[in-house]
Image (cartoon, one colour):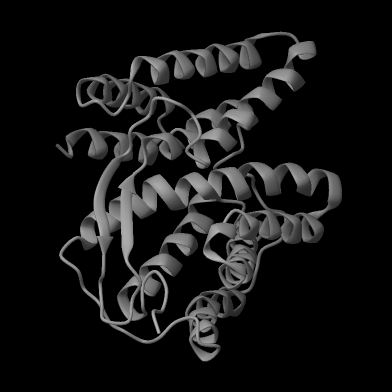
Length: 272
């Protein structure tokens, strides 16, 4: 049952270093997804269309570069919002209450979001490694790491979270899904693409704040407090990307934040 998802996660793990192997594994995942009912004929038609647009973007003349990039970017927005038709993501947990003070939690393995890094890599060859001209001293990174639990403690101080340690038996499923199908996908979109593109237009700091705000707005369904904390978390991830130029660094900060939240605090929110 989980073989397809392990193959899909492995394809994402190899995408930055062994592109052809990653694409091969993705193709195997798609075939398995058809047999397991995750991908319907409508989804296949959409994915084939996206692949054709990506081919045009990479191998056409410059006149088609802008419109094809816009279409590919729109497709990633549809994927991150789960609006692309025909993809039946696998529901792993359904309204599970992890602790007495935690709100119910539903978790999916998201095939649609896992496709985002592949699409954006067709647009931005520097998606995973943009490079950086300024090296940070070691204590800057220590402060950035400390900011992860500090932000969660601030959320606790204002009543949004409470300390409530957990070690659920589905932790490995959470780790697999959150690292590859959530954190990497969202970082590819917001830091690898949006922040990188904006940095060339507005400069690093303005791009950092705009991207963090957009990232926060994506969490609007959780209420204004979640939006605010998502913006602050987005600043942490954005700084990690800006300092390192590496998508996997911001992804690990993103995953580390979510994992710390799950292990030590009410998750996903505090239920009074």
